Amino acid sequence: MASQKDKKRRFWIVSPNVNNNKQTVPDWRQASLVHRAAFMGYSSDDREHKDIGYKFAHEIRQNDVILIARSSNNDPQVIGFGVVQGNFLKTISNFNPPGELGSLRKLSPFFPLSREPKGLHLMNVLGHKMALRELNEKRENDKIIIDWLSNRLVATRGGEQAPPVTPNIPNSRRSWLLHQSELEYEVRSKSEVVHAKRREAELVNAYQRWIEVQERRLEVASFNGLRCDVYEQDRQNLLEAKCSTKREYIRMAVGQLLEYGFLMAAGSTKPHLAVLLPEKPTMEKLAWLSEYEISIVWREKGAFLDNADGLFT
Image (cartoon, rainbow, N blue to C red):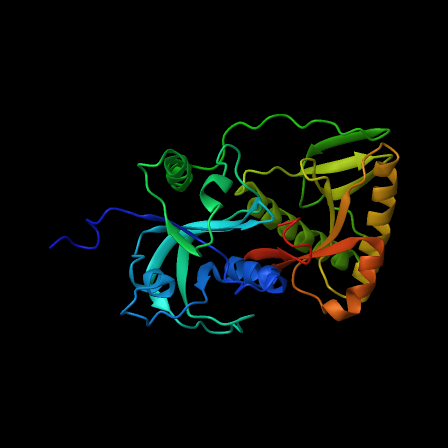
């Protein structure tokens, strides 16, 4: 009898566990990113009929690959992919499911995704109603996805990158993200300055690594003698990093973002604005930010989440 190691790796597409409730989509997405897991709402115990929940729990094996994705208004919505580790679980510690949970599969390594990778054309395989589907390399569209997933799992990071492109902003220039001693911050004492710079630098660098895994690129936006911590040209995202969720830090970030956004709009570019924080703040106290179209991005258990349905993460 063949051992588990000898069995051929299988590739699966699992939809986010939204239970036909679109309002829970952001919550399940964040749960997958934080806990590095795929979730299934259907029961894992229906052995007789071997329905989707049973297949998810019992047919998916150690070392298989799961891509978490769904069709949303005829467009692909992707969350990430990873390699299955261990047997199925019905619960994990410190997790309050946003809906009914049948079982889950932990994924390691796990790669976050916030858009369809170029050339995959996921709608060719997502045009179905099933929450679970196995990819078959004998089908052309499936094989393209299998090959891409396999290549990403064995690829090494790094290599040459294209030089930055200057956006259409008056008196502007852009450069690669430069941190440690170069992030702007002003407080009263010298020790606080050093501490704030160090924490913000570490936060920005961690966010950059998170984004680069998704084959996206971040830079610094500089214009009119000012500089914003993080700029992503592809999505027109501007983020200002702060080392604390205290009110005075948020207010400072908002003032900076509004000025940066105004300057970029003068160059016919209206950016998406967000404050980058080391942890999730009390969202109720920041409801006023929606009036200024400013989002929040925060770090949670090594993942980065936002309240903008994945626009920044």
